Length: 242
Image (cartoon, rainbow, N blue to C red; front, side):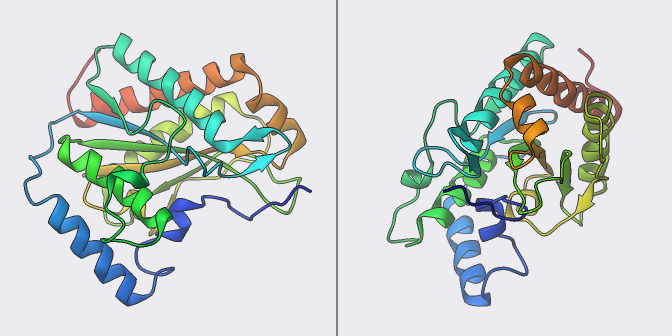
């Protein structure tokens, strides 16, 4: 049986800073984060990390045999390669089908999802990342809903600019409803990485968009659009040209 979760950002939603966590949980996560990043280097200007959501036992959203974790990993790897081709200093939170919760001791945080998401932020900070782009796929109980979505932390004008750059490029690729970038308190875009955005590449619950996201050629086009947005941001806000 197929089940859909509205706005299935899964890990990001579970760990949204500010609204979806109990205060005690938020304090505990922040303390663990501080402990693990006490020796974090300063951000390297223009260093990018691409974060494919979910992985391993966490498949994210799915329809039939198509899982979010696989779609976004494929797109993210394509973005990585395209950025490297243009000389961008780029890293990945994961390059294979794995979750990251094992990187955080269970004694520090008992809930696996929280460890997984925290590990992504710790990786980014310990690598001196300046720009983080987290890639996800979406789902809704309304199967008509389609279109990419873009989220950025509410306290960063540069993150807003990056989200709009990516949105402009993706909107050239997608027809149908267009969602403007939105400020959000999601953990991945609100946790100490200078510039962070979360991109939902489309809805697996929509037949047309699911078909597109199953197509390697469309995934390549999506990766190219995301890459162009990132490169435009680096040129305009970091003075880095390819």
